[in-house]
Amino acid sequence: MTESPTSAPTTTRSRSSFIIFLALVVLTALELYTTGLQIERALRITALSGLAITKGALVLLFFMHLRDEPRALKLTVLVPIVMSVALVVVLALDTVARLKAAP
Amino acid sequence: MGTGDKAMTSSSVVADPADSVATAAPGAGKLGMWTFLVTDAMGFGALLLGYAVLRTRAQTWPNPMQRLSIPLAAAMTFTLITSSLTVMLAVAALRKGSRGLASVWLAVTVFLGLLFVAGQGYEYQQLLTGPQHLGLSTDLFASTFYTITGFHGLHVLAGVIYLGALLILTLGAAGKTSAAHVEVAALFWHFVDFAWVAIFTFVYLLPTV
Image 1 (tube, rainbow over the protein chains, first blue to last red):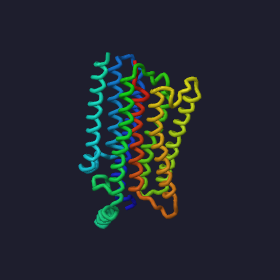
Image 2 (cartoon, one colour):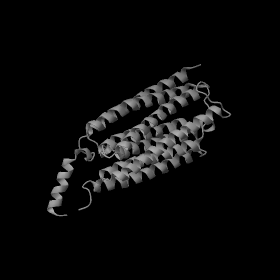
Image 3 (cartoon, rainbow over the protein chains, first blue to last red):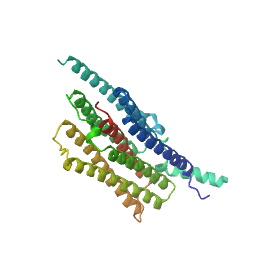
Image 4 (cartoon, each protein chain N blue to C red):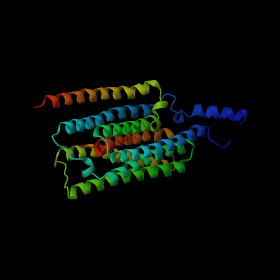
């Protein structure tokens, strides 16, 4: 037996890493393509944000292997993310309210 | 594979907890790195949130695509994504016991990291000495741009030093690194990539008009 005991999962991981790498390259190309599209600003911002969130999720789940980690570690990472999103929403609402109230 | 091989396989996996797959309980190094990354993400989040608030409340905001070089930033993005792949290949090589191949992939990762830092240096030089003369205190856009990208650039530099040190240890005769050590460093490196994904989109690509 010449193969190391960990080579089977390692090979699978390497293969999935290549796929994720290609997906990230394609998504980046899509982002650049989206910036050149003659579409509504709100639609472009939504598309770019969606692409960025997808890219971030791919890095977090597959490159950083968060999907394979125990639940406790997942929660350690996800709770601050949820809290940050809540903070963003509150601040965004505050900004919109202040802009509307401004003379 | 005979019975003896099976017995050897299972005992090898148990005997080498450092190389256990991620479904097992994370080691102290990994847990420590994740905790650090969560707090570090708060720093990046605060900077990006501050940028968003300032940009929204400003009377006018320059179009980043007219001030910044998008092809250069795209090339830097590609460099960082590729380096995330090469650091994973280094971990995979170490798991297979191939120290030589792991050294090659680590060296490539360090080189790509340095390439990113060089690209950022070139970008800053072009902005500072080009026709725009965009200094740190030129306007709000410049201040936020240099702060966010500078903070990220320091992370890349720290990652290069970290991986460079592991490369030296891997090349050393004693071979003092394991896949687990490099995996913890790779976590930091992927996080640098993760942060750049947000910066590239929200600072470089989001339109103003």
